Length: 507
Image 1 (cartoon, one colour):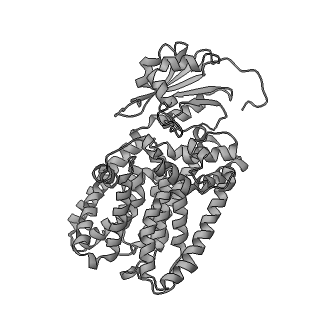
Image 2 (cartoon, rainbow, N blue to C red):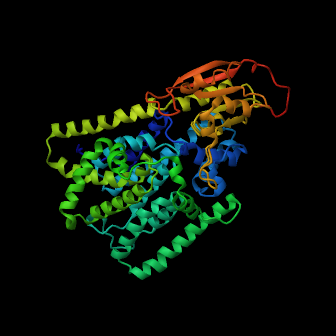
């Protein structure tokens, strides 16, 4: 893997940026609702005046910090007249890809410019899959990576004998407001920093931690309070609803060992092998690997606390990826110095193929239908007096951030029962008896012009769709589960060709 001459910083960054921008156009599949409903839909409503806000925004458990950044981008597109539908969809992902690229470059610099480190971060399949998505975990991971590159570790080339950088503290506070669960990582690193600082523990705490925390945190509280309309501290609201009231369990429950047996192996993929070797090496010689031991402590606490929470997801492992990849490259680099050339090529090829295969499958094929349907709907909608009904599990598609047309939309609600624990959600009521729901919903109003549903539901609503014709059938997944089918179907009302009366507000 060695080259005769090290690449220039600009060349390295451009190579990283190319890979991240490539992911914008390669990854065209649905992952989780939060990518759209917790960022893009919020920003779209802020800038264009129409959109949908989930219950989290009504209860104030989300910060406007990240949607605010997207809103600035949308505002620029609006002011310049470039707010075309494709630009509204692609611009936020391009922005996030650029942020992730800077994070990757920071990771490369943090490891001392190691080519293996660059290779691992650019080929990591889950990061390629999520690195250009507008997920809170994506921006959180990027910020954590940059902060780690600025953190004053006290070992080898990471020893700081001059004044320590304080940027990581600012980034840590931002992380906590974006995703309060990241506080676990920063508590561990903060304690380590206090114990090893060159400036004095009390001096660092009083003159640095407290002022930066107050100013940075206070600024975000002011931002959120302004947009939410009242004084609010979003990390506290997040903790109150998701932990104290256990609202997170409403969205699914998993066994305590899920992260160990499924979450981490799936996210790391083939990189799990060097990570496990690194962990074994650190545990054998902890005194010689103090910083790596610190990483293991941070990872262990993070996974242990997350394992106690019933609701678990793969993306919750993502913020630990910089630490895992650091450990992986720290094993591969010493080995590569002694390995033969053919061994290097074999290992590099295995890592590349082990990451490319899942990245391509999950980025191009798995759960593609609910994204592909949006531009088809946008092109099929004749005017802004059209109505669209989504008969799917709640938030199965984006909404106005991908339609970018002020039409009437209706989707099944699934807000958690905040006051009445055993209350049935609208989504549950619908799937229990679709025909009854349809009759009650359209008893005194016109039926929608378009209906979007999964094929698994077709046989249960055929009587309600007698006045419709099928317009599209879009492949979605080879692994249907629950109310999610193999294909997405779009139905159009037979008489929806009729033109509406003239109006000045028609687009």
